[in-house]
Image 1 (cartoon, rainbow, N blue to C red):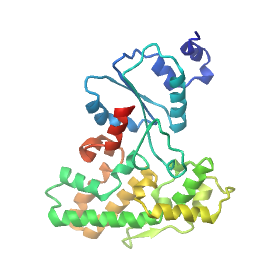
Image 2: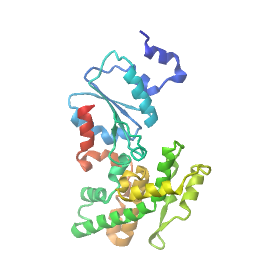
Image 3: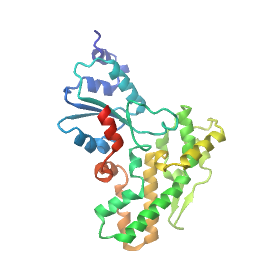
Image 4: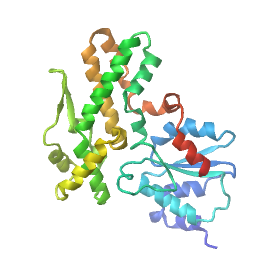
Length: 299
């Protein structure tokens, strides 16, 4: 029998570092092996996984993207492991795959676009207010702030319908789209001097240049169809998660400015809690992830 681990080590140019790290590790039969897309994922999932698999050690690996994760899974499925762990799990973001009929049926995928999307709503700000500044903003004022943030988020989301539909369509056509280069400022901006949120003009043209997709041709009807689909559902399903969190930051700034005074200062103090900090709060904020529990029971 061919020792694939030995073969991989000899052919370093073809090595997937994640596979090597796993098959050469000293994992045990009662360990739970977890593969993630990237380095941001473990802090989000860790508390959920550790509470579910009490008495089992978690061994965590990051793959560097969905494509790499699929390759890792394909290899492990075909490779005869010397020791079979208690569970081997694959957790990844949903992205646009639902709309392009590319969702895997053998991995866990997030309910929304990505892990960031779970926090892109006024309810998360309510959670932060109650946790960090409960005496500064109370009762009705708290309700009004959350409602105003959600309304502002809805306005910002409308500005993203066409661009996100374009990106979704490009992904379906397997056109490489570097979405990490984009931010909410490419679509909307908060003008503090005039105290209003302004929609950027010529968004599609500017974005096309930025992501180097000038030569990409598409039918307007395809984009319109996706826009209608997006408009009918929660924006957390179709707006890139990192951009959705940037939307939340912009919304908080805007609503805080409307309030003014000490409440504005208190509310703005929460801006640092919108970002990577969110992932450490996933379990206390979300309390549970039913979709994850269902996967863990059947994986």
